[in-house]
Length: 338
Image 1: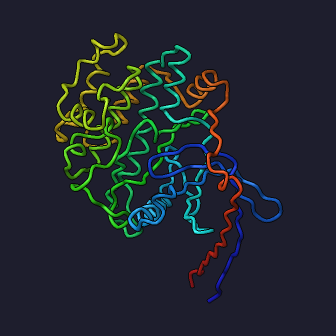
Image 2: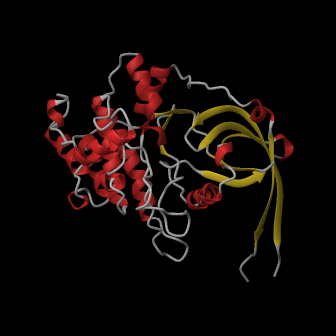
């Protein structure tokens, strides 16, 4: 039986910092291969103050392993998990665009209102990505039980071409991949989490549906009705604040869209959409039921006009990372079937 071995050397050169979160930093980088091959990618690393903590390292590696096989147009693709110069990193698909937080800030700065149909379209694409992730099984066909647990404005990206991408499965719940302290700690953004997350309960896929409902309401209203001055206040609003009649808050919201929002934001999980597929169907029927509706191209045109095709730039604040070269040797072995 023949053994086929490929050996490649990849060199990553950091270009700029894209985003910095509580535990990780994402950089734009160039991947250099043989014969002057160059590809722009995103490089995610753990923040230095967490890099020595075993749990964070295990979950960082677990995230890479979890999303490696999540191949879907509405989920950011992972290319490689590596380690170089004592730094663990994940090489990912580079999305030339912005996250929803940057998107809505630009809308406010330009005094623009997001069309209702585009708000629904964006959320429908998030639901598509969630439906795929929720249904994912391992190589033996056993469901992984993935729950993202952090569906929020910072973790939803829009490319300038109009593609909507869900990212950051770093605190996702999935069997056998990540260290799970559910019921002991609260994970996720306080103003987007489900009531069961905020109340230290065990979650399932319906938790992500509540978060998707918060995203939709935020896109439509231009504000998050659950956001408080502190994380504790936000969690309290998630748990206790009455869900409003959205028709009274925005005249563009009709009966059907109001029903969809309430179906997402029911505090009792048993009264929510039971799957992201069903949420996706209702959202898509809402925008396409009468005929032609928004597309990636429609959203792309809108966002390019809004930003002038220029993403917000953020220079690296760590000079050391500006000059670091990450080198990784990968050996891929493929044993042909006899």
